[in-house]
Image 1: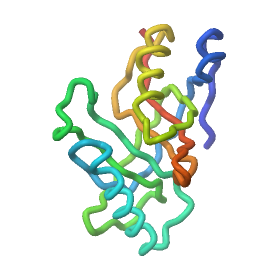
Image 2: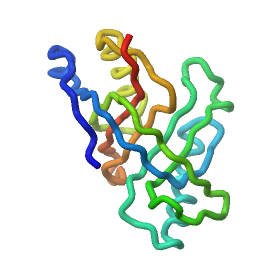
Image 3: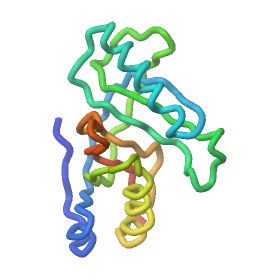
Image 4: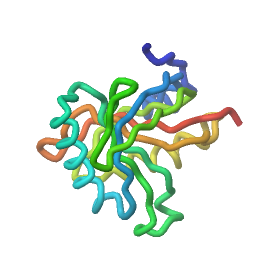
Length: 166
């Protein structure tokens, strides 16, 4: 099921191309991580990728889910998940668990990350776009969907944050 996309306020959509979408639920195989994102996520993705390959799971969406605000939470306590979308009922093992990313209203922002500066687009979404959007953060994690593997130091990705009207 494709997400339902709604127009955003004109001035912000011209600058940032943020869309408001209704996402369907998505089943994820994931590893829970704790610690500074840049320190724990590469190994988490390596471990999850090895698990997915061993179980012949390919073609899913690769995601990073974030549960804490890095401006308010000490780096050693940051909680995140590395995840790949899988069919419902997929058998998990080796510390990999299943969860359902809930359906709901999300802001979607497609962007490019260079030199591993993942903070800049997130700051633009939360500090520049969100205060003027007519929405506030909803319940649940924000997340990244990776559109490439970052080869050459350039990441193509889509940021999502749950929303609720103000």
